[in-house]
Length: 70
Image 1 (cartoon, rainbow, N blue to C red):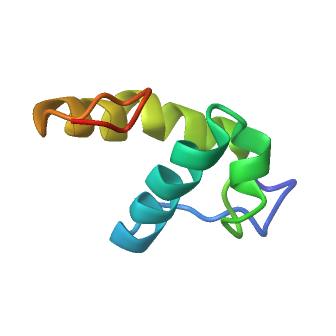
Image 2: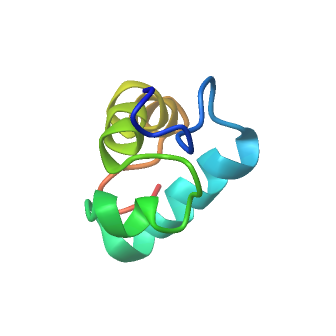
């Protein structure tokens, strides 16, 4: 996005993914609050990544993505 040159491009790192999972466990779907902890990532980008990658990954591991319990 040329209007926001501070926005990161490209894939999420493993550290970012772990941080999203940790923050989601304590904050739930408060994407803008989670985005405040990830420099250069937007709330919408994080929400979309959660729904398309992380949630499915947790389910494959036998972890409930809502409660974060096995």
